[in-house]
Length: 358
Ligand SMILES: Cc1cc2nc3c(=O)[nH]c(=O)nc-3n(C[C@H](O)[C@H](O)[C@H](O)COP(=O)(O)OP(=O)(O)OC[C@H]3O[C@@H](n4cnc5c(N)ncnc54)[C@H](O)[C@@H]3O)c2cc1C
Ligand code: SF4
Ligand code: SF4
Ligand code: SF4
Image (cartoon, rainbow, N blue to C red; front, side):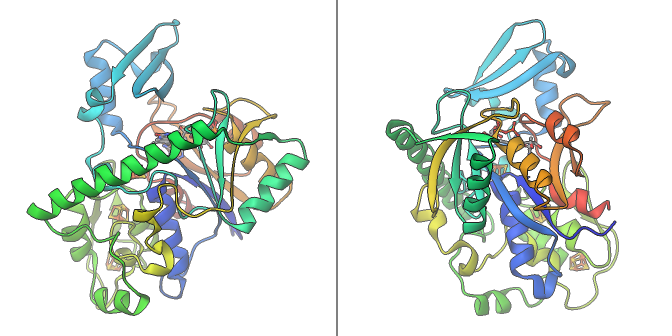
């Protein structure tokens, strides 16, 4: 199946990986990802440990209707109408530790960012960053896919506070981590020329010591996707290499969102601007069905398919055998897009896994 272009939905780290693969396309060969819809993200969870934590509290995942992080609480809504709530510190046991060094809350390098913070309940906050993203949202509004309102000033202040808070807290974590382990590389300000020098002989073994072994791997699957030898396999815990790298290959290393990233991509706003650079910000709600918040991501994906702006979209569905286990999929089926609405709070080697399986 030849895919000309596709839209990707992902967490900020996954969006950064897609950006790197496309930006360094002279080496990586690029990807069909043509539009990046980034989600806001404070942290992510391990499916395995989340399941175990809930089981200890006598909750089986098959009995969970919805997960929601609200007012600093992790809320688990059950099918029988009950609600279980946990404080954020209680989620530490199933939180992925790599999220402690993440500086991006609002998907700063996407075309369109979407999240709940900044908008009233039932609405999504939309940050339009590229002209392409802004034109698509204009189309959705004009064609009656979404209703758009101005962002509330107070809620905007809260969004900046939360996004800035993540950056400063995790910058402190980075400093602490670097005092005992290797440097965290992705937020260093370097030029393309410096990137060339620093990554000249950077193969999977260096990726392993600079990222994977020190607990900074976000499990995005980019290394598996770009490997020309198909020797990287990503399981639910970490990427592993099953073969020998040809001399001079550094594709996994340069595509990884946790290695050096040149100034052309990050331009250092990651540290200075709480929600990154943007053209416009607003609140919106879908007129086409429900979602986790305003259902806007689902509305965007439906619009992109209906108007044939992309051939396929990435969605994160659920494994039939393991409730709430996220499964990435590439599709052009509207019903699949509608049924994938809602947030699955655990890590998934999303777009790249789906692309690899074509
Ligand atoms: C791990 C995680 C943490 C988040 N943390 C925050 C937060 O702290 N604050 C905040 O405001 N918002 C957060 N969000 C975003 C929020 O949960 C909603 O996804 C967002 O507001 C969009 O809502 P919607 O109703 O427009 O999306 P919907 O229309 O419900 O569509 C959601 C889309 O997200 C995709 N998706 C579901 N799970 C995943 C996943 N694990 N990885 C990638 N894609 C996925 C689905 O395929 C679907 O297309 C987080 C999202 C994730 C995945
Ligand atoms: S590293 Fe963690 S906190 Fe950062 S974007 Fe990825 S999942 Fe979210
Ligand atoms: S061949 Fe080796 S260095 Fe090249 S992408 Fe694959 S694992 Fe990485
Ligand atoms: S090591 Fe591979 S899976 Fe892990 S963050 Fe880097 S590219 Fe993604």
